Image (cartoon, rainbow, N blue to C red; front, top):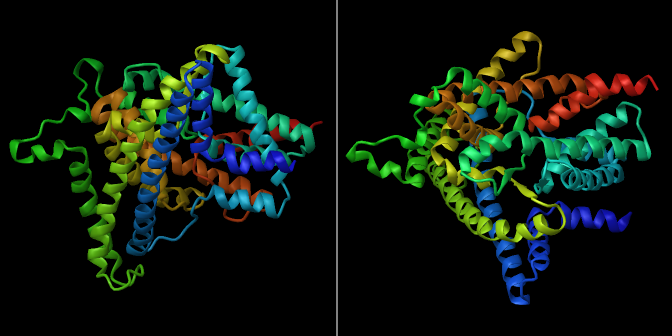
Length: 427
């Protein structure tokens, strides 16, 4: 058990190492030279670490923005945190070993399904798999499952999600990327498909669809066609206006004036985007060719399902639009849902950016600019509604004011709570 925990804690949940090892395996299966194997493996590791560094810079900036947002608009409610649920499940319920084994079972089920069915997707976002394992284990435990049955059922449910979500999203991903080389491995996919559906209904038709990427700027504003400058023009006012409402004492800024601090944090956000996209370019340049070795030998025609930032370079304007519209939708839902007896869920800026940005890509691809705007607001409402419903479920299990954000894992939890749990209890 100790060896398994070490592998999960130090290898499988470390996405950069997992993907580097998979790239290494792919190159070995293609019988590349030792130098090519080492080079491809290290570049894959480096690319993912650069991507992660960009994500960390963005997270730090958005954490600050979330704090001043709450202070500026005096909002109090539940902050979704799957990490807190994971900690409580391991420490209070003693489910650490079950979660670890369920994680491993999900990964094995994913490979088996990919090997023996038409769904050829290998889910490579290790942290997302850990959160799925947490949800299926916790809700399976409260449904009365124990031991091997708890682990196997959780592994099967999680394994199906890890293959089905990339498969369902792939038609739109192919449209966005122009090829079938990579898939989306992110457990917010149901939310992306929800936005795509809304964009399909209310967006522009294909014959006169206008992509947000095709906006033609007047000559004086041509500089906005640069991705990083356009992001800066959007984020600077957003940060500065929110900081002005929050006031000087909202966040400890040391010796730096609070408005200047907000300005620098907005710039840091743009720096994070720059680093992230550089990492994506380096990663894709190595992982896709290396993965062909696995496709040819272990899982014929296998497609790597990668984390959502990998797709940001394909539609950068849609990412920013998705972030903004999703944030609007979450703010609307924050005030509307309590009117119906549900918990007040505070907007999570990290989720709004990463999930909202990816959803914006989907909405723009399916319904153009109008689809991305309407779909983005609806997406924000949707990804607030599901965590609010999960609060009710968690309260009955003894988790006070707890919920999570990734809608696929929330859906899996509600599947257990509403459907599987009553069935299990019959036996």
